[in-house]
Image (cartoon, rainbow, N blue to C red; front, side):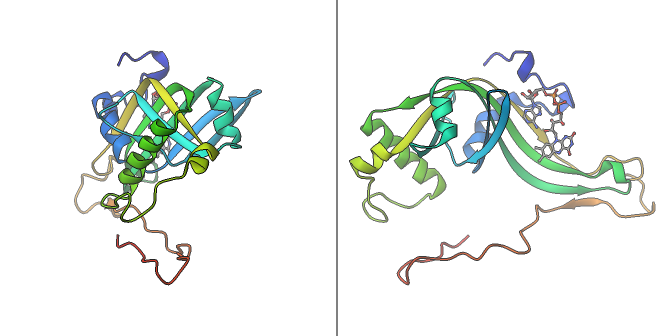
Length: 210
Ligand SMILES: Cc1cc2nc3c(=O)[nH]c(=O)nc-3n(C[C@H](O)[C@H](O)[C@H](O)COP(=O)(O)OP(=O)(O)OC[C@H]3O[C@@H](n4cnc5c(N)ncnc54)[C@H](O)[C@@H]3O)c2cc1C
């Protein structure tokens, strides 16, 4: 996929890994979807579907009344970011605190998928991506035609995308000096210390193991 100026990583160009973009999108869980309406930018989080076998397409879905989806269905430009946080990097120097990450920025345009069987197929693949091991017909029932019609599915044609990865420890001037004052290292991504309580709807529902 050819990259234009808008997709060329200037800052830390050494962290540019375009060949890993598909792999990162296939592992991500949340897409931040950016678009502008009348000059006002919006960035809205969505779940999404992406399959490395069809690397130039990404899918978004939601209620038919979603402003974001209605706007994007008209074919306007969209910018989508997916980020995997790998670690918190702490340094002996304030300036060199950082994060380890894998991230992708996608530029494209969307169209609405209208055909019910295509929608059903993408939704099943998407459910499998988020919940591997769950089987249609055994663990959950397929969406009805009415539910499919009430749900908008957008196929984003990816025109270009960039990927950037930071790995390793802190790069401060004191971080490679054993015995220098302070501490340095890489901490795992933080778990939310005050997670929202997970409610299950009925006593028959399990909490899925992590
Ligand atoms: C979790 C996380 C935390 C970060 N925290 C900071 C921070 O606190 N401060 C900071 O300055 N930077 C941070 N970054 C890096 C930030 O995303 C930008 O890469 C950096 O700020 C350079 O921005 P720029 O607009 O000058 O990029 P440019 O290099 O000018 O961007 C040009 C093009 O490169 C691509 N690009 C830029 N950044 C990324 C990216 N991260 N992933 C994929 N493609 C990209 C896009 O296509 C963009 O249009 C963070 C990144 C992540 C993933």
